Length: 194
Image (cartoon, rainbow, N blue to C red):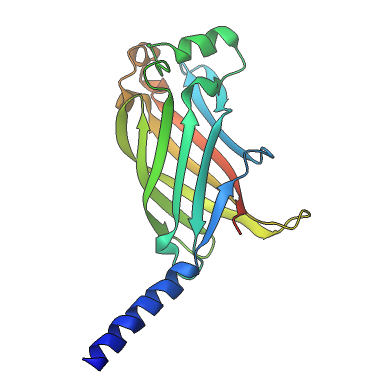
């Protein structure tokens, strides 16, 4: 009986030690050291660039156990900006993002696959316009360390490809197949929570 109790206690302590190694970060929205940008071909003739200006999120990072890394992000769909007021209005309409009915876009990781010391793939679920799809984000750690204000930061860049046809946007087919792919670029800097 004592041996069984000792084993359970050891497992609990080991589990605690493992989880204690994970560092938790809040994405630096206040200082705006984070960006969610995208580009899409306009009818195959040129690139249209844009970004989401309002979002929030957090991530956990465990150097010793990278498979435990996690990220959760919520984006305000209404914050889409392509540097053109009329186009922004159209993108917010029911033809595309339908922001009145679907005000938020969410990404929640389901697993992390390490691809070396600083690289990996975040597997997760992206919910956009009420549709949830599996999305893989290739990530690369840019750096980590102390900041001038007594905090500690860690930053990553990420790349993914989305498909408009996956999210049931009524106007998307009119753009043609060349405009179905959306290339996503993320630059995320987090502040470690104390």
